[in-house]
Length: 139
Image (cartoon, rainbow, N blue to C red; front, side, top):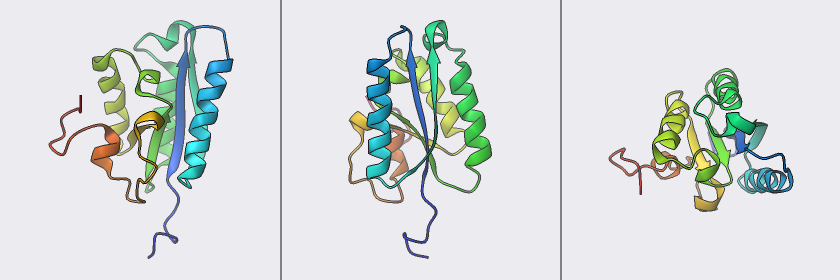
């Protein structure tokens, strides 16, 4: 099977916004969609936590995205795509905990501002996941 025969990677776009403004949010979502198109990845949808949910650890849309990944991602490569790592959480411990939920179901998180556009179809999971080859978070 060649890489052209393999199913496209599924993309689940995530963002969060505490304020009511939408211009920056829409720009970040568009950036993620453009990156996914450049990578020839298939966008499944977008999930956005707003208001208080955007800054708490109980993120209803993050949890909904995880549920969608479990359902849609069976037997496929899939990523949670964010414009930057801060879109998951500013606090590194919270960010690691949330990203681990994706990793637990065999997905990876990708930040557009941190990803090389030359990511091969195999997606180099350790590099994309933001961990070193020993599985430790990169700093």
